[in-house]
Image (cartoon, rainbow, N blue to C red; front, side, top):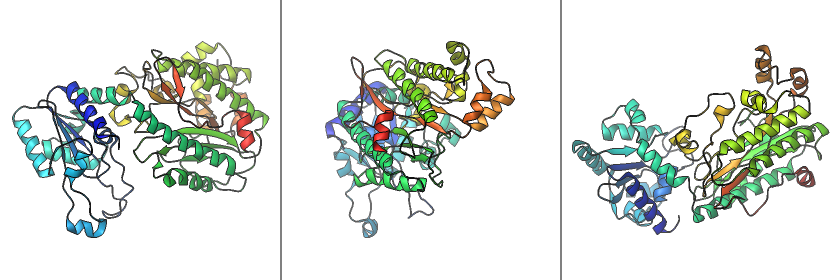
Length: 460
């Protein structure tokens, strides 16, 4: 946890932003794997962590914006629980760690919510992604599941986003711990990969690193020779000479802050000439995107810079043709780059995605419906304190190519005969994590992930 004063100030700021009503922030419960006493690893809700910092199941934070008071509700464990779990301090002792003096039971919270509703007091809550918290809200408020979904507080969402989007110096220190551990994961993989290994062999080794540091992985590891599948969590393939290996993984610190990096490297000791050509285009797109970063510049510009660079590079190889700007405007480049250049990052690997990308990454603006561009998670103007990823890539997806070709799509920009030569190429991306400062940007982490062709081949 951070110091107590950090949580007190966050709570005060949220109360100030809302002004009136009760703010409910449920923490998470244990999530059973296959029966109640065999749960998955517990992961606290990130917004609850942000305001209270307590990594204990079954808690609900309530901020009374009308009265300026904060409380935590939950049920203390009993002696029978101690038999199995060891002695656990009462909730009031946990609450003191984040500056909260008032505590109560879940039954008492039911009474408080009922009284507030009868008195016409607004009850604010965020979108919920865990079914047990949806059920709690249904029981407490008398709402249906549909109402719990439709009657979330937009005012609360905007208030939380405005706080969590701007990382403080103490948060940056914690994020950089996660980034450095993530660099160690990637360096380990680059050094160990050999033909004949399975993808799972790599996963096992890299996931030891954050766990040995007291943390965990920040999302399910992507480690694959089939990099054309953007979120490929299958690890059953045997690695062969000539393959490209794509690793997208991250470390989560014990406090819940994430790192998120991607690398692509040859299974052999060197890239092939064709692999170098595509890798160089992706690297150029990465640098073009980074070069745009500074306060006040929309991240959409960083994404467009990557798209233009990819299009120019593929034109140089004969895979695309025509006017570069027109091709990007039409979305023709999305055959190779069907996703976004980056996303916010912090306590969530896709920070606050459960609150809505239109609020977090778009400042309440409408998202594009164009294929590729609609998957851009971040487009808003950049502000000091924003932390996000930069991760353009090139992916050769045979199924998508076949569909577009059969539809005659973008034939003025795409040379399908030449593209067919790359059906078994796979995909390439590199990823780094950046902070927007008052005057520009800063690459996060004290360790530099190998990324140039020379750096990667040196490790191989």
